Image (cartoon, rainbow, N blue to C red; front, side, top):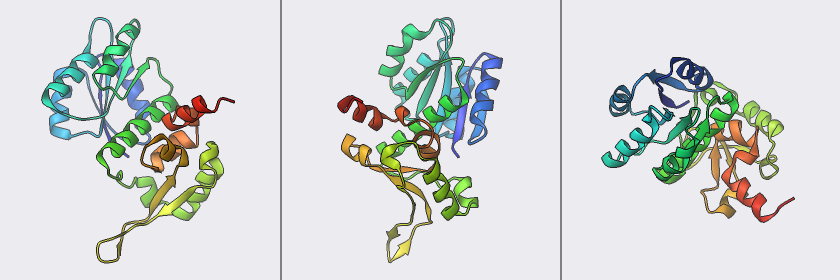
Length: 219
């Protein structure tokens, strides 16, 4: 579960994005860019979702402001009607994803999980253990995810990870998957619960490593 900030001037779109993200994340939302920048500085969200339309270019302005300030927070831009032409500029400024509105909840969840996993990879860290993992029987959760697995590279590869650190001290057990496609793609091989739940077990075609593999090995 990540702390997510939504910045969107359209109330109905903002509420729809809140509803889509809140089942698995701690969500805060604001209606304008200045409040959003203040919330980023104060709340330190792990991810930002920001709106963009042809009249109110909050997404572009936010990315520019973060670049000027050397602030690095994964940012998903939600493009409203007519904003598609701005997608190249948004991606060049470092957006994690550009998604046209309206967006299906599953698509938004996949984009969030991809962005968080990419951020974890870049920082060389593991994400925090989610409340679902903390509260579940991990053996049962491991078995469930292996049953639901849709990626052929992940079949029966979900496991309970616990690492030895320091003076033979173990880390807290958590759900993980060591992906051979990511290793081949040049990314750190391990992915974690939210990515497994939202991408590997739902739509592997949303995974960059899978996309690269399919481009090299077309069906």
